[in-house]
Amino acid sequence: MVQLKQPSIFVSHGTIYEAFKSNQLKLNFLKLRKEHLKNTPSAIVLFSGHWQTETISITTTEKMIQMDEGFPIEFQTNYSTVGNPELAKRILEMLTENGIKAKAENNRGLDHGALIPLMLLFPNDNIPVLQISQHYNIDPEFHKRIAEILNPLRNENILFIGSGGLVHNRSEIQKFGGHEIEPDKWAKEFDDFITKELADKSNTNYADKIISAYNHKQFFKSHPTSEHFLPLVFASAFGGQPTKIYEAFQWKNLSMSAFKFD
Image (cartoon, rainbow, N blue to C red):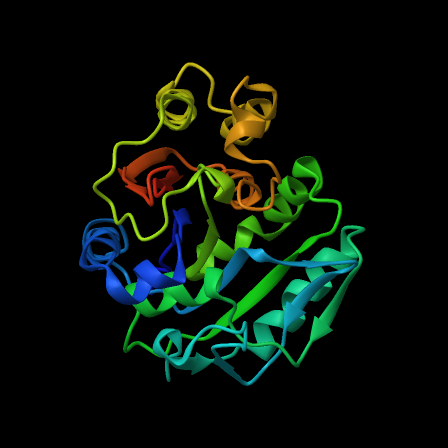
């Protein structure tokens, strides 16, 4: 029996408002599923920009549902999927054996960084899912190492998703602006820079190139805090060839760009 290998992907999840209201966001995720995830994964590991802990934590919950983040009822859903305690145990062992302190978390649901890609990519699949937290240090090299340790799991048809935002500065957005407003030059410049870096095949150390972007002149304008950029470091550290899946902006300056790493 041939064992399928999954890519790792980075998605910009955007706002909960657009996830429920926007047809464009649904179309973007449909394109991703149809053209770039042709084999349904046997399990999904999600790394979201909305979960930071003192110790790397892995969900061991039997059923994954939307957690309470205080959203109005119109942005709440009955979406659920099964958890994956067995895979969580393996990941805990892999990290611990390689010197990464990690623990189980059995009382957490899906934050919106995890919920949005799951409900738009896999609305009816009930694929086993777990989440991995970010460490409070938000150190890119540390989280790159986690991805490198877990990379062999991709050969078992396990999909890794980093969910954040390529440009994420909420003080520079136009609320309820949809996807039609032209972004500011600084936001487009940073998006274009990352796209160019990942398109350059002369240097295939893609995670290192992403980490070097922390020194870009527009980085701190694009990311006053870096937790939404870290999922791109994580996804790129699996080492595959990158492909840009789509490019868009939401609410003026939230980049919705997505990448696949084969």
